[in-house]
Length: 422
Image (tube, rainbow, N blue to C red; front, side, top):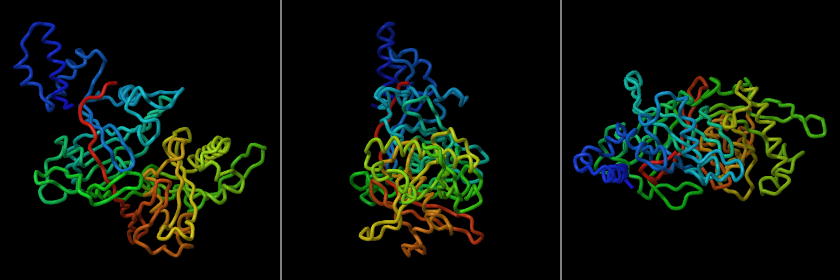
């Protein structure tokens, strides 16, 4: 239901009760002017607090997109709104059935989008956004990282909402500024004749998503040091972590700590499998899931300290297991099993995929070693096998060794536009 229609329904209820004719009110209240009538809308609702929202799929994630203008000016007041929208916390069931969330991290996301500042506009930035990862079982709200999948729809949303003016030509490139990582992301996608995004062309497919849709090229500009300011926060392509075991002994684990698009801890699947039931963990068998999950969190938290990040923040850094592809897995360069918010991801967080693409071209990292042994280190694109399929990512380096860009192709779809209650 369109926002204007929802507004009309509420005004009809209000005016029927008061006996006031509402034709002039209805002309005045449209989707575009709903923002100024929000207090009135809140008063009318039998379920408190509806706000305009759009529900979009980007890559293998879905999320609520909000115009910042409909939220309180102070960001400190946002958390309870986001928890209410998603149906969190849900400590007993972890399904978020009382909200828009889906019980997994890839479905518990929000993007807050706004016009850029005058200074940003002068630098060629079209739109600004903040990504929010909402906890499922708890009340955690994480602003520390970005979502690569939903980043692919920021430009589409900005054009749809009128934050950006319609473009001429067959394609548009929208430059966005992500406040979480203080980085710039370009999205390029096809346009319809009216200058608005056209998302239904059978151009590209995304592993884990049925069918084909218009190609959205996602380009992270200068993605190195997104959170820590350094591509290799520990100063080395491999860091040795001393991990305490349940029997009181310790075990050395080799890890590549890389910060590109989002900070990620890469560890060897084979090394971890020497002392933990990793194969059973990947298959979802207990008690392996509980045991390996607990140990991966210990490793992740220790690595976070090495990277100068808060070990208690669930969303950052991410952690992932790397392995070489099977001989018969033709064309694949590396295999990954990534975690998000402590749970094995059913596909791959796109920022982790982009970070892996960068890491695979940094000499000495675990990823570089696997790809080099596979004799594909000179490829422009790195093919990554994940639980949902295969994705190709690219990374470009400047002459001085800094990361110039990281790219991937995504698709997206508009799912709903209306109001969401919190």
